[in-house]
Length: 132
Image 1: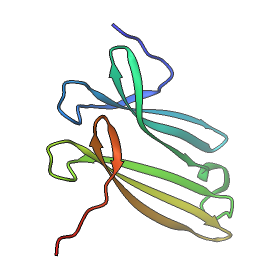
Image 2: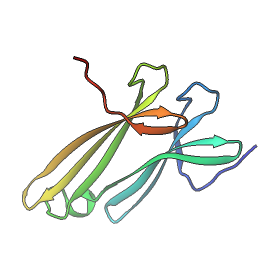
Image 3: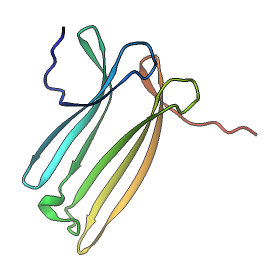
Image 4: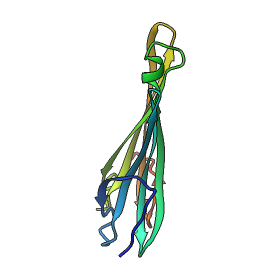
């Protein structure tokens, strides 16, 4: 039996490639003074050895400055696990949303979606091809 500390809280347990080895989504979060920051991880285990597959940071300081301050920011991400390429292996769709504050006005929001296929135990950027 293995014991690990320092990664954060387990959010979900998956087996992306159906090989009997689990991949685990974990999150660590810190807060104080009206701000939060954290990191989301996807790790897999080889025996008791943890291997990081992917991670992303997130943060928000709305509680410190409010949404209408030029100092306000929020960087969020969502992970959705789906089969992007039809191979029976679960892949990753990652949505990143950023908010940047402006004085007295609503923040500017931008959104990006990145897709990654899970190949040989790692994520590789997926760029769909078009057929003619």
